[in-house]
Amino acid sequence: MALFNFFKRTKKVPQAPKAQKISDRAVVRKTEGKKARPVNKQVVLRESKTAWRILREPHVTEKATDLTHFNQYSFKVLNNPSKPEIKKSVEEVYNVHVDKVRKISITGKKTRRGRHIGWRSGYKKAIVTLRKGEKIEVLPH
Image (cartoon, rainbow, N blue to C red):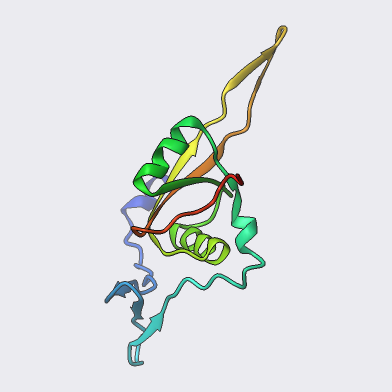
């Protein structure tokens, strides 16, 4: 009588405990029978050997050069880095202090070659705001 199995009571399986957020850098994990202990979470970018991998190239367009008046610079970045990783890599490569990072996902566009239709690959762009009085020389004069 498999039809009536849903009437039978099933035992509830205990689930894993969830983590509680205390502050921006510390997370406390609950464990059964043990004391809760804080775990530090910090973004650690390895040496500057990886910083050039995160930043592909500066994104130089007419609109990007207008943003330099507001102390903002744009870069093409890899698809997976977080904002703190982008911030550390810009600070390591250009020796400046970054205030804010914004990420934008640019989707690929449709292209045609005769009757064949394809897609251009998309990319991610990061707009970095620097402290007042600091500059980055993106294009050599």
